[in-house]
Image (cartoon, rainbow, N blue to C red; front, side, top):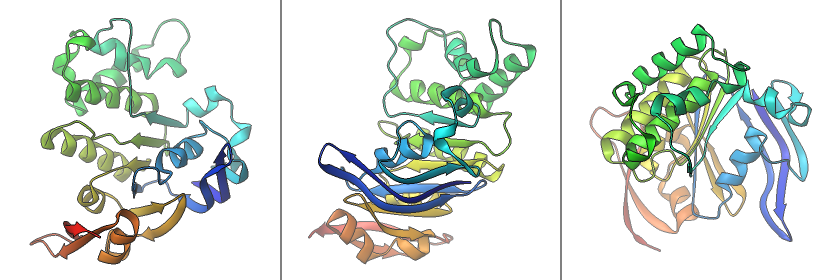
Length: 259
């Protein structure tokens, strides 16, 4: 698992995260929600080892994350950032193969090629393999980037996948496709952490939900435990109505108004 023990992080004099205690288990999907500026992206950077905590300890599979080189981290976790810009033209299959770079020197093996083909098929971008990435729509590009990061850890048991707002700018179909893929990976034993803005998606797909407010944990637990009218109002300043949707085992919310 990945664990954070009394972790804090500052930018200058401003505290972005304070006293965070958290464990992310293999085989679970954790959704992180909160208002803008709550510390979500900073938390993900600490969990993935892209930034180091100022106080406290971050451990990856019982080892301090500081002991891992970037090359070693690339073999244990993959990160889908909010922004993935390219200044050079590449084919889609070349972009997805980039996810395998940590696994080979020089030329990819037949194993790497097979993984890229499998991942493109599973993420629904196989038909785009020969397309120039720059000619794709925003939604198509996001799915290609998801395929790339999945390819990075596809054959690593119990690896971790970090998704920073993966559904932004996508239509409803692509949003559900990406989250279905994330859910499937968690069911296969991967640890998945996803920053989401849609509370109902967090409730629908995640095993646990973490709500951040001003750099601190407001609530952490199953969707039924933490997605309440009170917690959403505290986190977002919006009054919510909760419903038991037919056939759903998770809370469904709609806004009532601004507090």
